[in-house]
Length: 85
Image (cartoon, rainbow, N blue to C red; front, side, top):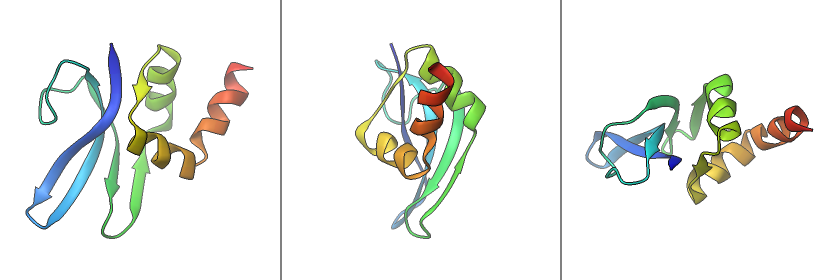
């Protein structure tokens, strides 16, 4: 099973995260299938690869709670519902 989750990058005390599609059994810093976005909680910036995220969601990937909240803020989940309807 594939999940969309955060992968920690950056220096200590200045964390930034990549949003990645990754196998459930992999650890947080493990090998990812594809990088689909970027999240900086300090500057509150997000950069999303919308086609890649929609592809993985259509294939059954489950976002984690934090990634779900990021996608909801970006109003990406509404786009997904419109495409699937």
